[in-house]
Length: 270
Length: 102
Image (cartoon, rainbow over all chains, first blue to last red; front, side, top):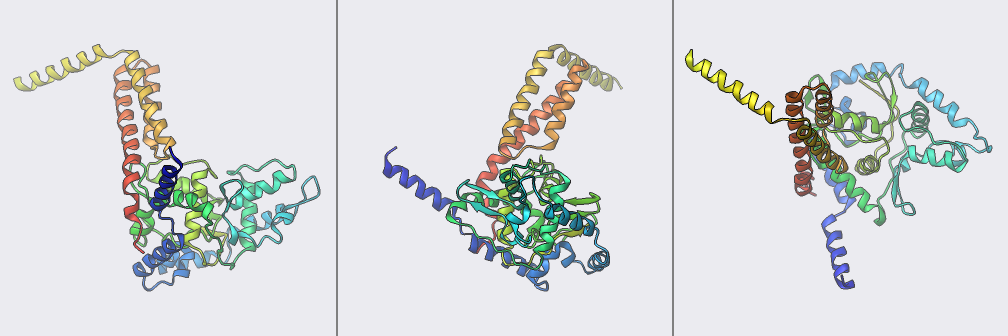
């Protein structure tokens, strides 16, 4: 292939990608403004509880004694502990008010770095073993960091190097999968606000603001990627590994769609 | 009544003929084929839960010498595996249609 042909192919690929995250986000937000004209976009950080007054009241009553409270306390203890080399999480994350900057695209590694990946990077840099992504400790640490980051506004961007990861996350979000042949967008855009059995389907805007979540169904606090697995399986698709590249890309896309919204994690959900 | 007996006999003959043509190798090959398409779907992040379940059930039936059941399960596994691969191919073309217009 000549250099001119290669350049042309690259140009066409870039044009085909039509990666315009900010115009995507504006259209995404506008979609929900039009679908729910009586609901402020920022109210969607409460998920389905922004859409149903009756369940919202029940949820607010539960929040008087939030079930994730102990997880935040335990996470704070873990966060304050020192590694064997004397350093600690504070050396990587300061006082913990950092979640608004995650996930981000790491140009050096050419990959999306989520908060959980950064926690393990911090450990590895100090000679510690990484934590299991499906384990309790990483969820507790994420719970404390989420709590320390409350009310901060999501502040991530998509640099040119991150466009392919963003587009991959976007493609995953809009693609049908599983035996039921549903995409994420079918449930959380087209059918948002409608009932699936007894549950109201939440809007995708604001969905990433409150993780990790204590789910009564799980009887424990768990990460966003656990919910991704559950969503996949609910439509008959096989779930992926927590922190797989595909799920990190999906989180990257969804978080950019909620850019500017306040963080309110951890939270409780049915 | 005679027609009913004739139909039943026909079904019995068909089932026996089919069982006669089946053997462990052909069913095993069918399972392998289903696994291959399922792996392809998995690499495209489009694999289905039902396929993995059917493959496991087909293997268990084969191990238990239930050849006809293994054959039926592996055929279903192959159908769902193919459907998941074709879903991934189709979605490559159409996913953009769901993006809200800016």
